[in-house]
Each structure stands twice: as C-alpha cells, then as structure tokens.
Length: 139
Image (cartoon, rainbow, N blue to C red; front, side, top):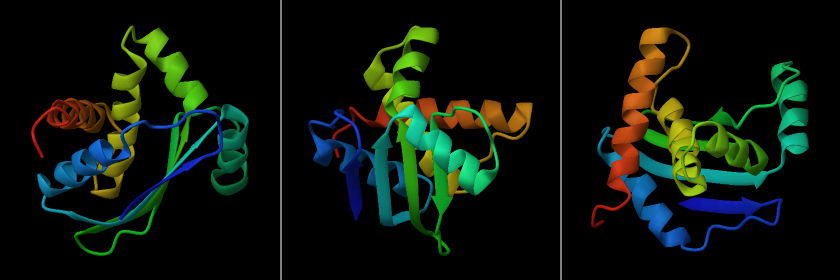
C-alpha cells in the first residue's frame, strides 16, 4: 500500500500511476511494497525533522525512515516540494522529472542502495534514471 500525505498545496494528480510505477520499480529489484508513506512538505517542516531526528542543520530534498523487513519495502518518505522545485531549476530538468527522481531515490535507499561514496552515488544515479524510464512503461 502506498499513501500520499500533503502538508503543502502540492498534490499528485494521478496517484495510481505513481503507485504502479513505484510497485514496478521495487519488483525489478526483487522487492515488494508493504507500506510506503510519502509525506510532501515544505523546507521548514523537513528542516525540523532533519534537526530533531538526524541532528543535521541543513535543508534536504528527502528524508527516509526505513521499516523494511526482508524483501518487503516499508518506510516513511518526507519530501520537500520547495527543494524539488529548486533542484529542478538548478539541474535544468522538469519539476515532474525531479519529483520522480526524489521519490524513487528514497525507495532505492529502502532497497539497500547508498549514496555515501562516489561509486555508490554513481550507481544510485544510474538506478534513479533506470526507474524513471519505467514510469512510462505499461504497468
């Protein structure tokens, strides 16, 4: 089950398309979705989570809380829509493309992918692109 929670004016129009895409992205890695909670918020909300739970005092686009059990993906994924918008401008990509990248980035973390080294980051970016391409594949 995938839940979408909105703490900003932003709202995904076709949630079922995103459901199918995320479920399919997990399947391609040998995982199944148990429960994912996407919480779309603003910079200040995510900054407070970053400070309170991770002791980090900086803005970020996503924070993922991992509740994975074996090959069953579960977690809470907090996404700052402010960061997604700014990142899209900075990277010269569409908002929709950047949103998909951030959404799948969190899920990839839940499936064991890291971005703590240059090599791991390169693998993560390749996986993000691979999964973004699946969005338009018939589910």
